[in-house]
Length: 328
Image (tube, rainbow, N blue to C red; front, side, top):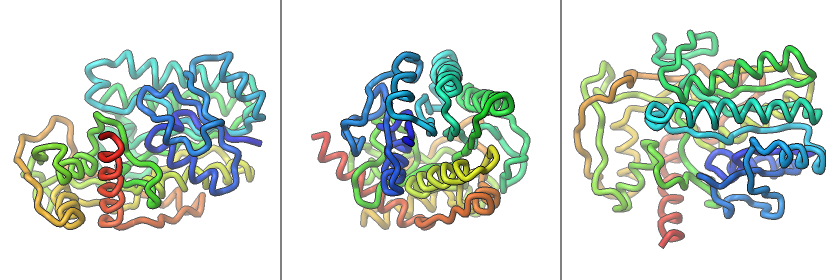
């Protein structure tokens, strides 16, 4: 049995491939390298450079490697871009996922783990968000992911396949051993941008709104270390293979940090202050969004190993420095 990781040359996909390899899995990667990097794949001979919508290629991979499970990361992930170019997101995240799921059914794949997002909740009313919270995505990105969740639920009801849809909160950090990290040039993640600012790659970082109803006036988010998130996928695979029922689960720590707390952590890691500028609120930013991770802990037995802001930031900064040297 082998596991196919789509988008396995990207940020979260490459970390998950490492975790699966450490668990003894035979890992096959498909990635079109539009945002991923071939050097991020730890077993280069098992990388297929291609698109998940290439039916013949996917069929061949499933058959040749006896794929029994797919972990699906391939897609587009930038919310503002999805608003400006919604058709790109409905193609990459929804239409191509539909093609991939169909090939899995045709090829006899038994398990499917999907990279979903907390964006399916939109602007939740509750501060601690559980899986039964209303689903009201505010962007084409969130809607494209929710559509794929719906497809998986319908397909699992009609065919011999089980799935896990993992809804990520704010993913950050990098591989503790420095093998991979967030490498996309146009990434908009707060911790990455702050680390770039600390290293002089950006002149300053902006805080969008300082008058929210939070202790320091800045937005609060639930940040999860990418290696803990990768471990959640491996745990989901073990659960499904063990006969577990299809699952939708949040991936977060259940507590959050404000923008200012994150910037202070980056300053501690860098050993010097950041140039910080105030900016107006961005439309659609909730004051606080924190996951309720009770389900994933109870169902998968998942427990995070890196639930510490300074650790997350330290790994992110170390990777950013390494990436900067690599790109020179």
